[in-house]
Length: 418
Ligand SMILES: O=C(O)C1=C[C@@H](OP(=O)(O)O)[C@@H](O)[C@H](O)C1
Ligand SMILES: C=C(OP(=O)(O)O)C(=O)O
Image 1 (spheres, helix red, strand yellow):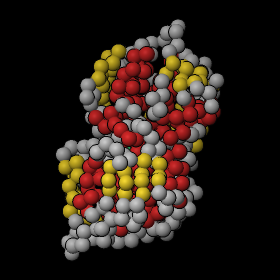
Image 2: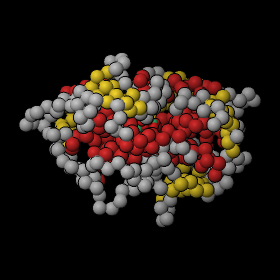
Image 3: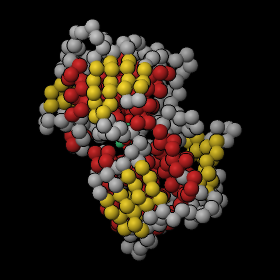
Image 4: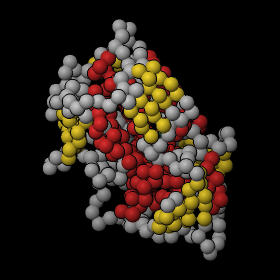
């Protein structure tokens, strides 16, 4: 694989193209944990080709090994932290250099208070972890936990996924500001489809001990709406009249990122589910807004795409609720500021916000777009090549984390990747 690649957009995009999207990485990873709790280790046919999902298959199949390496996959690390506590075995769970900087403290604290045996092997509050045989608290009563809802919803999903398998079940109360709530609802929605009864009252959840049950019909993983967002960006930046079709998406989706369809309406992108089941995106000639505002608290994985779109359309944009971007594959807030500025935009950031003051500009000298080892950096910036001419991109292979066929699929639309 070359260290960098030149991405060249076609002179004009050919209309009515079709892209068959990859399955959702988030749904796939939950499904794998649920199936593993059910004692089933064969991956489902519709599983995502995302490297993170493929790694989780491998890790679950090797779950007896002493050292498990989740690399840079956040959901895998967090879900496995909880899942491995169900095994009565001493194991080390580690990850990439970046994973060792992503906090895990609130999840470890919660599991310890239930009786799990977890030690930090490096810095307190961060991976790697040593997980030992748990001695779940021997009480008649259902254990009750409080957990901060403002750092990562993955801790909460991890606890919910194992709750039915705990001897007394679990009562979970979220505290403070809640971020990424649709991912928590996705976890519960999927658990429900696998036969789990739960009670939810606002920020409190109650799950009795019970067994997961496979649904009557084979569960098919729907297409990935976070990946669909990159095509929304292309259509938003394209000439009026351009349209393309995306396959495998569901209108009534488990994924909160399906909100992209609504967010793109005022930028002239019309979404229509066709009778054959495909989603058609079409750019209309409607006038564009003078400014944009997005609260990304509940859809952090769309934030980089929204930033790239507004910088591409040169519409001043305020983005809020970005605190969790600081602790993802890279510090996405700082990384997007750097890269959009390389492309001529003016950008200001604070702890949890970004203000895009002016858009990207075509320049003679082409900067090298850095990947920060973050799949979403390159995928969100790639559509800008429509406006800016060829873009040189570092480490193109990073897209494999969630969408290994991204460059091939862009190729189908006439993009050249040299
Ligand atoms: O549960 C999930 O599948 C995810 C939750 C989100 O993380 P946070 O809850 O940490 O924001 C999201 O950014 C991540 O890509 C996937
Ligand atoms: C943040 C992401 O993944 P994770 O937290 O699972 O590494 C992502 O896919 O954008």
